[in-house]
Image (cartoon, rainbow, N blue to C red; front, top):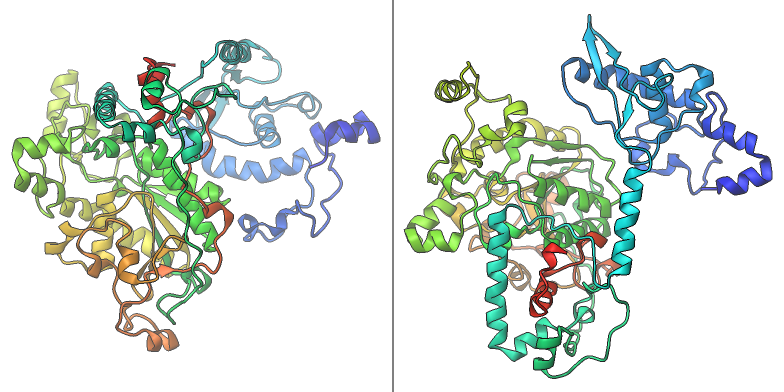
Amino acid sequence: GLSKPMLAAELGDERVQKWRHGLRDRPPPMPEGHAYDAANERKYADLEAVPRTESLADTMDRCLPLWESRIKPDLLAGKNVLVVAHGNSLRGLVKHIDDVSDGDIVNVSIPNGIPLVYSFDRAGGQLNPRNTSVERPHVLSGNFLEKRGLLRAALEAEVMLAKRIPGARVFENRGAGSASVRALAKLELERRLIDLAGDPAALDRALGGPEANGRVSWTTTTTRPPPLAPSVDALYMGLPAAAPPAVPRPEAVAPRYDPGCATLPSTGNGSVIVILRHGKTEHNKLGLFTGWEDAGLAREGRAEARRAGQLLSAHGFKIDVVYTSWLSRAIETAWIALSEMDALWIPIIKSWRLNERMYGALTGLSKKMINRVHGEKQFMKWRRGYTNRPPPVSTFSTYYPGNDARYVQYLVDVRFSVRESLVRSIAAGQFVFARKMPKAESLEDCMKRTIPYFLEEIYPTVVDQRRNVLVSSSENAIRGLLMHLCDIPTERINEVEIPTGLPLIFDVNQKCLRLLDDGEYSTVPEEALARWNFGTALDMLFRPCDSEIGEGEDAENCDASLPDPVIRLATLPPELAGPPTAPYDPDDAVQADDFVLGALMGVDLSQV
């Protein structure tokens, strides 16, 4: 945490440079109990001894075993490997790969954020680096993916352009997905504009300005002219109307835990599963069947994921391991939540078996349209039925996972398909082995892959190792999981709904499902549960804990009445005050109402 220039001024440049780049020069050791002492951090709790100081040679000593045990075998197996690490860790690796001398390594630096790519020849179980470097062939055989200064110059020019042109902004419409999704989003915007044109009051609310909702304005200017009161002026000028009055928040509820059933599970002996459906996506907002389509999180979804992490942190949960699917929306939700918990370092285990249900030919289609074309009865069978599969997707559809390189290369725990192999061999003009991947799934099919994975991989981690586990997944994978955990019969599973971005706490010992207090829940259990849409099966999800599972005093104190479904906070932390907000991202400042503002001004912000 000390300043390098300050140290150089006080101790001399030569000494500081030895600490920074020397092979065996160690800086002064970290004092015990210091604020930066890594021994105080949970992430290093399993180490026998946390180092107080390290030289580059020390860093190599701990990096090279990972190279030999994990990285090198993957390279020898023909895999492409991405190593994201730190300056001295990477210097240690390249010293080993290129056999850089002790004298030369002092002059080797690894710049921030610029990929250094190595290519290897495999021969006799050994890796021989090819010399592809165009800058320093006598030291490093790897090649930096940048013409020196070109990338930085381009980025600086882009920033200067944004500063010189009022309203210009670098904008990446993440989560918008395919052209069809963008078109539907535009159609939804047009519908909103039509509604707003006929409802001045709604228009005033939509143009209420960033201050009304705690948002950041889409305009780059820092000052605004006085707001124009009439809606017609706001309509033509694109300026915010008066902000609506603030809604007062209820005071935090004092804790009232039911003995055994509603105590905070994370403070006990573990055995807690945190179940988290991914945050909202653009597909969710537009009412599209998503399935295995890799839709990213919308801004609202990132805000939900952030609030989930804030809730878990405020309640003192310490997650030990995360299980998630191969879908970006579930992975990103886990990342954002862990970031709020200062726990990005914990293991994240991904499995396709936690993917959303495969919706087949319905993928990407509007639920409203399917309802109108096929009728409510058939629509509900496809959407919520336990054994009903949607129409299968075509072998050559872009939605079929057999055409996705991720699944073709890495989904290896299903059998080969004779039919798919034959079809693809004919199409390719050569023999191709193809695995049997789902073209459509019922909830039962989804459970047949999800529940065995849970029982064989996740459940032993929770019970045998007494770990707290976060499962970040999609609605139908979670519905199947809750069907198993809560003993929901097949005839009632269609009644279960799972809100996006809401952490559900399941105590494995007592089979209790609980919510986390954020200061907004009623003290009446029924009213507290009515805040979210869980469907009509609340009695199956939230019910008295199973005293037969518990042991000792907890089991004796667990009565048959419905306990408080909310784990209460005595005081409300500041981060939970106000509505949830997405992590700040300057490239993603345009929001839903901002699109309305832009459209009213004739500006398509998605192209800015």
